[in-house]
Amino acid sequence: MTQPIDVIAKSLVRERTRVGLSLTEVAKRANIAKSTLSQLEAGNGNPSLETLWALCVTLNIPFAKLLEPVANSTQVIRRGEGTKVVAEQAHYQAVLLAACPPGARRDIYLLTAQPGADRISEPHSPGSVEHIIVTQGRALIGLTEGPEELEAGDYICYPADQSHIFKALEPDTMAILVAEQN
Image (cartoon, rainbow, N blue to C red):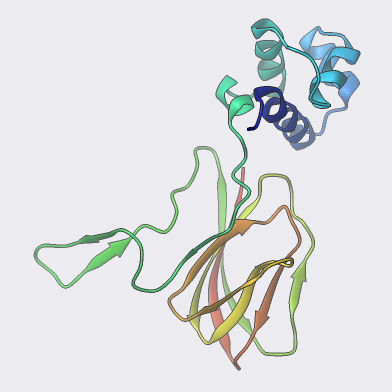
């Protein structure tokens, strides 16, 4: 079972890195001892509510963000799966693949790839997520340690702050990439 301090520790490191501040600078701005912040980031200690609030103000994040574990998982939705909403007066249906988190930035790309030219990406900024829908062909997509084979109509979502791959398995494989950054 994950302890709250473990979640808080990872959140503090992630958010301090996101804003680009040193341990010393965050401690100074939050008016806490550098050793206290260092211990919290190491997953030690029992921080007071006041200390956590001061850190949230300094990092410009809502309090709940410190207590939410980061969902570092891969999600695959195959064509024909997912929750459907169907129109009554037209032959039209929608399947929600992913909702945009508040304050996130999303960029959309059309990908075209050929076999033999694997795209291995180094980790992006902390909290980055990629969503891909294969529109033509087949590909191995996802984290380099365990990519998934997808075909036209399949969807995958994975944490892009880890090494990941796009490997076309058929000529002229195409996909839509939505890159999300918090």
